[in-house]
Image (cartoon, rainbow, N blue to C red; front, side, top):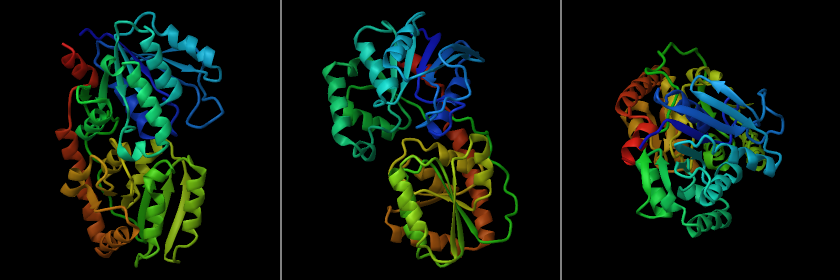
Length: 383
């Protein structure tokens, strides 16, 4: 198929950053697009859960290096609907939707698709992990109703899916049927081709970092409970937006119950340009996550030569077992206590060696995971 114009629909785009990895993934997707493709991005003029407008011009197309960007005001449904309808002229060859359940940037577009908007365009939909078991376990009734509506409108046959991994492709087929058309390609990143060089660590206690949105699925509460029983001094730095107030309150409460030799610093959101420095200063990143469809922050950690400790709930298990870090067998706090104690007991020289191994694992991953751009894979699929 001919692909010269791509329209990306996504709830948040730089300079927004509170949504984490998906924002950086889409930015990298645009920057890496083939030279013969123009990419327009329609997004919100607000960051995640923010009422204050980003420092951007709203409701007008802004020229960029690879196409155009429009930061739409979303306060009026009718106004946003007019904005969406306006993207059908000139007609894009591909409409790339990021999320399945977002009311404005996914559900509304696929309803418009059913009504004939963007007629003739390929509708590429990336659920970004939303069909995983853990994700569907949250607000299950509402999500299943949306899925039933999608099927009732006979939209599965109108869509090509983008899966970040083969595991996500399995999730898509489980929800949408075995005949789902799927492009499998890891998420784009704007990370370096080689890992950051390891420098001698500063003397002092073991530095642990948790970086991600403060929501239950990321498992900060599990980590804090596990740290109650560790035997060695630890400083845990927590970075990420306070997305779920109830979970934030729980974690703050758990942090007050830690022993004196475990210290917790809750730093809040960190800007993308500061992430590498945060990770490079840590001895280990720990995240007892329930599920990651890709795990952009894991790639970021390894690129900074920061080892990663996670359960077997991400696509990174093989990379970590090959030297990138530690795969914990489950998400039980007692299991995490044992894993952390084993890591801490190895001592500073071993921690430095593990950083070098993490960087080497990243370098190997970059080479082995290199693949054609999503647009090129879509062209091949639809020939």
